[in-house]
Length: 418
Image (cartoon, helix red, strand yellow):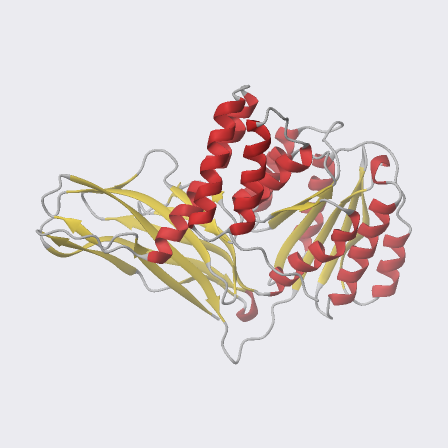
């Protein structure tokens, strides 16, 4: 398994006469499968809400979705199941798939009762997932339909950060309309997973399948982007780094011992890009082709039982010219629009929380126009609908708010397997 690493500036030309310039550096990273590669075993933990509000069809469809996943796991894969109401327990301890029928029977016996304590479920889920993380792709699906009324949201975030430090990926699924989108998004972002919205019970199987298909394409794990900048080049002080594909996430920066910036990427999928956008400022540079940065990826290859591998250190160049003409890169421009759509929607939500309905409507309208500009028609429709409702003096329903959040984060929706 190899890494594809492709950096590009949104505009490769710089004006030699400018004292300062701003550029966006887009970096596309993915795993490249080779013929001799073997499949990496999966290590999956399902963390399922079975509180009283899940009673009836919701819990039955979630059990059906979980059982379908058991059927898709292969010999050598691992599974654990943690369930929670206002307490949490391990329903299926971490184990290799040797007796799938017994696992399915345990899932089928699950009944709805009690309140909701997400943090306790998350804690036990991380413990079970960590038991099988060696030489596997380790991911959790956390599903809930409610607020964390018996738990603590700050504890949830600490557990999500702990999972990230263990190289575990957390995906969150909100079921129905009464879950807290802020906390589930923060858990997924910290765990470099994805936030999903299951609006109707019948969508649960497709959504589980979509996420499962995504983790089946993971080839490399524990990946970090390493970035060094040349003199006279610096990162923006505010929100310098973000991921824009497959989902939009604001990413934290770490400083390596050698002075380079490190950005955690987590799992790398085969032939599916993880796209990072860095906001950089450049001082005046001499004419000609100038190296402005170096990029490298550190990663583990679980199929080869190798850790701490490195790609070649790749230089990034800008052409400094006296007679400046823009040289835009269409792919990086798309990434800029994706990040703008996300941040405009975030600003709209902030304004709505402050009671500024008009300001929120304006920002959602702007986000809808941005989505249209990038060809994301489904997002544009959702964002425009929400803007129109606010302009008409109507409140946004919980469903509307959740749809708006989801389309702000995702450019292309994966198609569930047929």
